[in-house]
Image 1 (cartoon, rainbow, N blue to C red):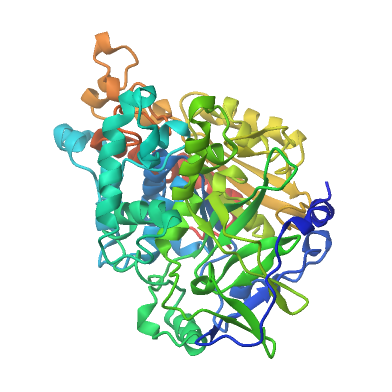
Image 2 (image 1 turned 180 degrees about the vertical axis):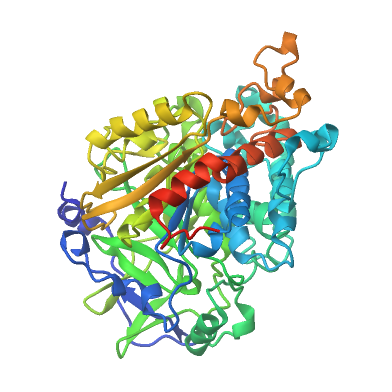
Length: 585
């Protein structure tokens, strides 16, 4: 694979924006250029990451946690896993936290939530489920984030998620059964555009505004309206160049890990049937693409400066539109990271010919931004905005940013809709899979030695034998990877935590809930739990698109919390990482 070489062959397909040396009302935005050969360096300079250049080092030990994608299923599991990390005291040891797709819908609000009690957000820890009120558990979401998941009806994987964004002209009998949903959500979009939101009439901000009103507005004040940043010192630093008051930046709450949300830039290359999918990183300090691709990528910029319409250089300074226009917000982050249907629409995969054109146009409701790149001291950008889709199109587990930063201890939460024996996304990190579909490209994720995949499956088999938690730890060597600009390294300790409903967890539940979990409804099993814990990413509760009810959310979050707080898991992970990373209580 030679990504750079391939990209250069089609560089002429991109329009280069000439850098004018004047820009009325423009303000400075800091940027960082990334070495495209970082992945080939046997001793890469980790100080090249902007967060490593801060005067105050990041809190925590050499520990990263990764929350996978999976719509509201993953958002729900992430709530429970965050609750568990807080309960064990391990959250205070986490330096980096990554999230993809639905995982960001919980991780981003958690990062910026400034309420007095985290339990109000994540829900109360339940040490003895036998004592819970079953009917309350069934009807009342545990925590503010769980409540929002029960209210959400948007943004899951698959074409069935798209009808709310269809153009009016294809509302025919061909999609008659979806007409009510189309009407309801389109009316909602029109109401949104009457509110004080950034760029309310910009079509490709529609999805951002819808998601922001679900997962950001009720949790993070002004998170859907203002730019965001890291600490107050970083906000002051940004203020000094952007001329935007420091108080106008939504700041990370105290004692939170450094967040990296994953997205994917979609480059529709002329002459190619399938687009080049390019990993994007969204952090509180910077946003950008690590690798160079023709005339874009290879550059980080301050988050507020991403998606600028005007970009010039003057005296080696990057100048962009003032910070109060084309606002880039937390809603844009979760919308891009969780825009699973976008790619399938853009390439028209599986769409009936009679509606293919209008359906592909519906992709315009999903995020598209103006990325910034610097080449030879000049800013360049593609001709027009590029689609910024789901992080799961490339790395659905969120481990690549941790490997790029050479984090040596990783807890990877795999919140899948399939058992671990049937997960091609997990497998793609061990083998280069020839998978290029509307769900993404898994052909360039190979970072671990192939032999270790069988060891992982065997380890999970052994861990779950007798009803134990699906937790397995292994030490892996990392292969250099050009796409993600990851350098090779050895001795990375990874503990995989899979969403598996172990018998040990079931046995601690009230008898009534154990009955509800039975697969046979004639023996008391509930239809709502027939797919537990592998809820469908969309259509679990038809006619709603992705809505989960209170029982579904509470039960999955409890399983996810237990998976990291039970005695077997905590001992296994703490012993494997050692006291320097996770000191004993």
